[in-house]
Structure formats: C-alpha cells, structure tokens
Length: 286
Ligand code: PLP
Image (cartoon, rainbow, N blue to C red):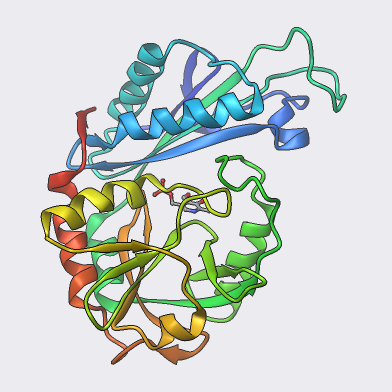
C-alpha cells in the first residue's frame, strides 16, 4: 500500500508529492507546522494543536488554508489512508507560492501539506525504558521560538551535534545558565522533594502541547509543578530529568553532557507520567 500525502487540495502518492520551487516555505522558511501523535487509532490533543496552529498563523499573518473543520477532516483522512494506528501526522502551512521577494506577496494563497507516518510504539517504549542522553549547547535561535515556525536550522544543527556526541537531544542553554528547551522537546526535572519543574512558556520556548497536557496528567497523579528556570547543574543533581514532545510523549533523561542523572536509570515519576498520558489526553478518532 503506497503512502499518501495531501498537497494543496489533492491526495497524492507520497513518492510523487511535490511543492513549487517558489513556495515561500522552501525559499524563506515562511511557514508554520504542527505534529500530532497518533496513538491506538486516535489523533492526540488535536484541539490544542490546532489552537497553537491558529496562534502561529496569526503571529505571522498567514491565513488558514481552509476552514479548521476541513483541516481536521483532511488530517483524519491522511491518517486513515495511510492506515496509521500509531505514529504521527505532520501538517505544514506556508505563505504560498509567489515570485521570490522578501515582502509578503499580495495574491499568494497559503499552501498546505499533510503527511502521516507509522511509528512502532514498542520501539519508542524500549527507548523510554533505556532512557535518553542529552548534550547542552548555547542558545543561538531567534527570540520568537514561541511560534512553531518551519525555520529550524539551529535545531537541526544542535540535534546533529547531539547525534555525533552519541546523544539523542540537545538542550539550548540561556546566557544566564538556565535550560531553555530541547531542539524538538521541552525540558523538565523532578526535584528531590518530588516536584516537577519546567521553564515558563514565555517567548523563550515553544509552548509544547505535551507540556500543557502534562499539567493535567500531573494534576491527576497529585504531582505539583513549579514553572521556573533550572540550571544544568540542578538538572544533573535532580532526582529525575525528562523531556516531552508529541511523538515521544515523556522520555526519561539518564545522562547530561556525559554525566549521569541520579542513578543513571529512568525515573519512576517520568515513567508514571508516560503511562498515564494517553488516558488524560484528548482523543479524536482518525
Ligand atoms: N520545543 C521545540 C523546539 C519543539 O520543536 C517541540 C516539538 O516539536 C517541542 C518543544 C514539544 O512540543 P509538542 O509537545 O507540542 O510536540
């Protein structure tokens, strides 16, 4: 069964899915995106993801490519046509196709691409059970990382640096020494008192949807959350550290810059948050 992508109004074979050379996403990274987890045949937290898409589009003054209802239908259809039970659905909206010029085109229509991919949940779970390693890198991104823009070059370079170092994620560090977030994840620690700590989602980080829903999950488990910055030293000395993102949910961190976090094994708080997540999150049948 061939993979199917949705490109500007048409369902096409993934292998044949193309956009125009003057798509502004291609030339200027002039666009935004969303990634939703698909779990057990449901799109997870679709409402929150589309609320954030609305905000990202608004911040960049890009119109919705179609009504929100229609976009929801297409997302479900792409998941369905690809028979994804577990995996992800990716959606990207750019300002559209226009002769290359930095200023906004007058007439371009927003362009939209939606794809879906299967991910084996057993593989992800195995990674969680092993725990992940992170490295730290100086923050070098623009100051509007609260917008889920497709301009991800610093994130790409940081992630590659992590890979070369034998790690899975890179944490961006503020000049004041506090952890901002990962290249594609939000960062958390668990203090010795069992309190969850994560940086406030101001303009310094992306307000992760998994992060937001984790507030609900923590509430259900009776865990307290403190929104404040934490340093790398505090993270290394913490009871646990973990990261959150839609495709991997909660992933324990066992090593930071080559030093073990606690006993170097995934923590029980992170694992119970991971376990409880699906039940608490919003589920939309694909
Ligand atoms: N921070 C960054 C920079 C990201 O790219 C992502 C996800 O792609 C996240 C955090 C986590 O966001 P979410 O939980 O919505 O996937």
